[in-house]
Amino acid sequence: MKRTAVSAEDQAMFLDAVRGSQPLDSRDRIAVPPPPPSVVRVEVLPPETKLTIEGNVHRYTARAPGVSLAQVAELRTGKLHLEATLDLHGVTVGDGVSKLREFLLESRRLGRRRVRVIHGRGLHSEVGAPLREAVVADLLGPASGLVRAMASACPSDGGEGATIVIVRGPK
Image 1 (cartoon, helix red, strand yellow):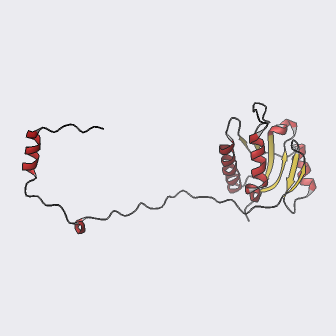
Image 2 (cartoon, one colour):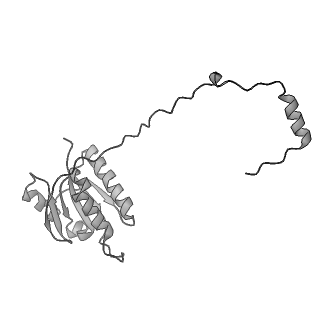
């Protein structure tokens, strides 16, 4: 913003009003304390877990150590009751991965065990299915500590466009 020009008369009036005043010493000034730390709790992902992966790029399953093949078979058949769904349609890859992590952490905190992540099949993408690939890579990598088992959804739950995840409970 531009400063407006002060007339000579106004300047003389100001100087006459402040004549005889002295600047404050620094010791007379009150130090303002820093603001308190944020009350927002930052949740950290648990350590990665090595998951056993089976299948191909389109139909896949993965399970943590100690998870039976029967539990993974239940995932593939769609017989499990899903407790929550995250729909990532239209979301960028970066936002999708961050929303996925938030969703998994919240699901774990709320005690949800079986969730669905809808990422799409990449039909409208020029380069395949980047969001699906990013979601699966994150579930197998950095977010694997939250995953007990996962599988591509059965056709009635979204098929190749969704992944069903059994969320690992808190230890």
